[in-house]
Picture (cartoon, rainbow, N blue to C red):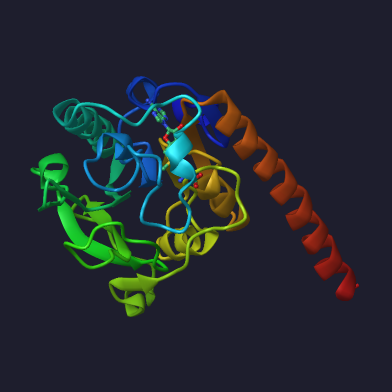
Length: 257
Ligand SMILES: C[S@@+](CC[C@H](N)C(=O)[O-])C[C@H]1O[C@@H](n2cnc3c(N)ncnc32)[C@H](O)[C@@H]1O
C-alpha cells in the first residue's frame, strides 16, 4: 500500500494542519476548501450582538460544533498561512488550491485577505456571487460576493474548455444542509469538473461537500475536519450518495439490457 492510499477516500477527524503534516509531499492533485472565516471576532457583522451575519443563512451565530471562530486576528492569519503552507507542499507540480474566503469591513475599512495570501502563488481571484442578505450597516453597500483564490503551481492547467466559465460565478447558497456554512454542491461541481484532478483534498471538510462531489464525479477524495459531528455527517452523505449513484447506474444499465 503506497503511503497516500491509506488516506484516500477517507474522512479523517482531527486538526487539519497536524494531519496534513503526516501526508506525503506532492501526493494531491487539487485542494478545494473553505476555512472558518473567524467571523465571531468581527467588529461589524452582527455576529457579536447575536443578530447574525449578512447572509440569509445566519446559522453561524451559533458557531461550529468544535471551533469557536473567534481568534485574535494575528493568530488567525498565522494559522491560515500554516494551513496554506501545508496545502502547497501537498499538491503536485501541476496541482492547485481553490481557497474560498470572504472580505469584510472592519472598523470602517475593507479587510481583504492579503495578509493571509501574501507570498502564495495566487493566479486568479474568482468572484462567487451569492444571493443577497441583510446589511446592518448603512456605511457601505450590501456585500453579495465571496472570493475563491486560485493558488496554482506553475504547471497547473484547467480541463479542456473550462476557461469558458469566466471568473464571476453566480451560484446561490446551499439551503438543504444542517452544517452552519456548507458549500453549494454546484460550486464544487464547477471547480472539480473544471480540472482533471484525480485526488482532491478538503482540509476543512465540514459536511463533506467536496468529498461527495468528488465521489459523484468518479474522483478520489480526502476530507479532514476537527468536529466528530461533521465527520459523521460527511460519512453519512457519502454512504447515501454511493447507494443512490449505484441505483442510478443499475437503472441506467437496465435500460440498455
Ligand atoms: C466553512 S466550514 C467548511 C464547510 C464545508 N465546506 C461544507 O461544505 O460543509 C469550516 C470547517 O472547518 C472546521 N475546522 C475548524 N477548525 C479546524 C481544525 N483545526 N482542523 C480541521 N477542521 C477545522 C469546522 O469544524 C468547519 O466544519
